[in-house]
Image 1 (cartoon, rainbow, N blue to C red):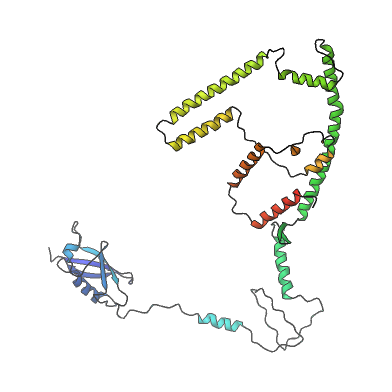
Image 2: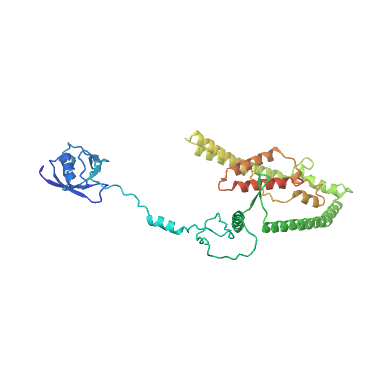
Amino acid sequence: MDCEELTINVRSPSLPDILVVKASLSHTVLMVKQSLRSVHPYTPDTSSQRLIYAGKLLKDQDVLDNVLHKGHDISVYTFHLVVKPGGLHGAPPTPKPPIKESAVAEKKTEQPPVSPVNENISIAVSPIPTAVSSPMPTPSTSYTTAAGPSRSPLSRAQSTSNSNMESVDEPQIVNIDGKQYLSISPAVQTQIEAYEKYLINYQQYYADWYQWYNTHYVANAANMANHSNSAAPSQPTSTSPNNNLGQEQAAPAGPVNGVEDPEVVRQRAARRAAVVWLGTKLLLALFILTRNASIPRMVFLYSITFAFFLYQTGQLRFIIRRVRPWNARAFTAATPGSGNNNHPINQPITRRRIIERGLYTFVASLFPSYGHDPHIAEALDNAQQDEAMPGF
């Protein structure tokens, strides 16, 4: 069994072909390296050879009978050969990329010969490279040029860049006093004029409608209130219709003769029962969900339940208001009787509004802001500041 002849296929990354070596189980790895040196085209030294089998580096004194796996009957094995640098004799040098002499010659031939040019001919070299270069004029060539305005290369480059900027449909940014502003295009100017005209027409329409409402609806409501007061003898009469309206509106606010309305009492009791029933259900759900739960999970569940309870009972509401970009001062001045009304703009700023504004700003800041041009953002901020200070 020890004299059994084996076939060893040797693969090497430096050789495209597979080397075949004959050996037996009694041979050592050093003997295989000596046989491999006679087969290898570059005859590497045995000291520079490294043989690898099954992911293991073989030593020179190892015997093939102990190295090879004899679990299955095969007579062909594959080794991997790695040679140290400098161990190859007669190895070809690493090929260097050839220099394209033809390309250099073509470049030399493409360059036109430098020759003296007539003094009457002025040539302006463009700073922008072109794909097709025109040949240089020679002294034998005669030119007739018509008189006209000459353009320098700088102005030509500026006109080219301006034409490219006009062809791109993007917002134009103008630098004024070190700040970025959005320039108004003709299309945007037309839209602004149409919007201003719409505001003027709407203000006029609203003023007419408000006048008609005061002359018809309010007068009819006052007459109906007078008729109702005259038809009810038990109620005291008054000469002012406004006082009658105020008394009718303020009557349901408190109990009449110390007795509350049964319907109001029933509705209040129903609301209280609904709140108690909702709290009972939520407590039962919390008891089931928080059994053997961790402290963070309990805090999370209690917070969600509390917010849900407030929302269902009407104590918590989310209001989203859309701010329209229109001039409130001009609209208020054009509206008749608007000075006597409590307009939302003139209301005092309360702590609740400050908290709502802060929460809204915090939630809006959580959204990603990448992918935006900082110059456009600065221009929009400057435009908003200009709208906030129309007097300056």
